[in-house]
Length: 134
Image 1: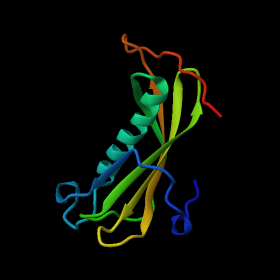
Image 2: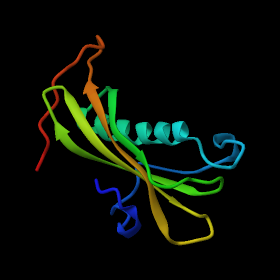
Image 3: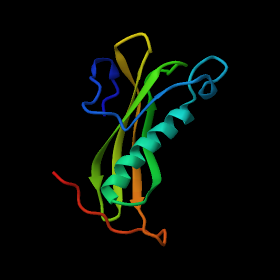
């Protein structure tokens, strides 16, 4: 995941999460909290992981979280997730978050990370998942 988001295109397809950033999600300066963005990313990644696992999957770590630019109140936030690696019980989901001023057409990547999940069974213990499909 390159750090120069200025020349990248938004991922193809539909985002796993799309939401408008609201005042309750911002600090006193009108910047959206990084923790709120991370929660949206976790929701998107969990959707990807649960679908692949065909069941419950839990977040075990987040790697490489970096913020490229701020998100402001009123921005439309789109979060894309893509399964990039599968182990015996684990799944790595690459997540990108893009923001668009509600009155503009151009979107910018604002953050990215790899979310790692483990599939769990009804007993909440790790269970095997199917391999990644090429």
